[in-house]
Length: 262
Ligand SMILES: [Mg+2]
Image (tube, rainbow, N blue to C red; front, side, top):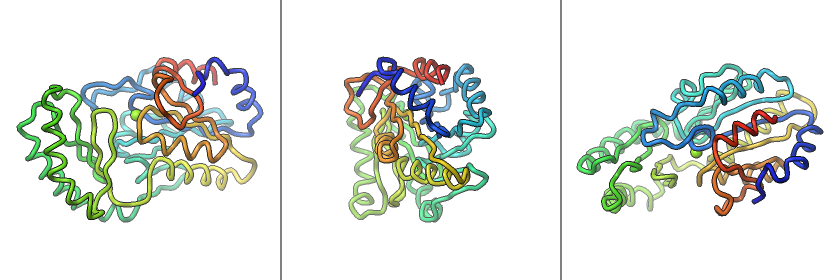
């Protein structure tokens, strides 16, 4: 990966010569610092202002793609005139329409039961909890004592392994979080490809240059989709991380700097 600010002239040239820019970003860890409790991850006021300004600019279409539930994401970002993709893109609102992955929707009651079973199993481990996001579940263990992490993993495996091996659920891992998803072939990458196509269809002319910023394992699908669409993929974190992104920025503060430069 190249440090984006080292090659800024080259990237700026591509941005300037593009007809339109589809600016997409992850939320947690990319626009906000990672915090112990996900409900406390607030969008910095400076970033909200910059995103609002870009969303009003006719050269830009702005969107946020997150593992959070759509309603939660919208209330956290609190901006009008942008695209929101929640639950890794299983639910999307933007371009005047909405998308809801049908199998995921059908599985809501099942995930609710799984939520109860997991919550009961994890009850004895301090700091571990399940977040029910409707179409997916997250098991958080950021504040669990290091010596207890193994217990979380064992409890999680005991409940989810039989469901995983029979293809009833998908499991992904992030920063101190396990995620349970419905068994559908849909992820941030597919959501980005859908948005790129939708952007083209809506504008009806010329290509839009897609950009995606992300900081975690689930964002790798996004980087792949961006590279396939000749876009600009930016990993947020240390540059020695193994990522499919072409560029990196070191922190959400640098992302704010980047947005300012846009
Ligand atoms: Mg993230």
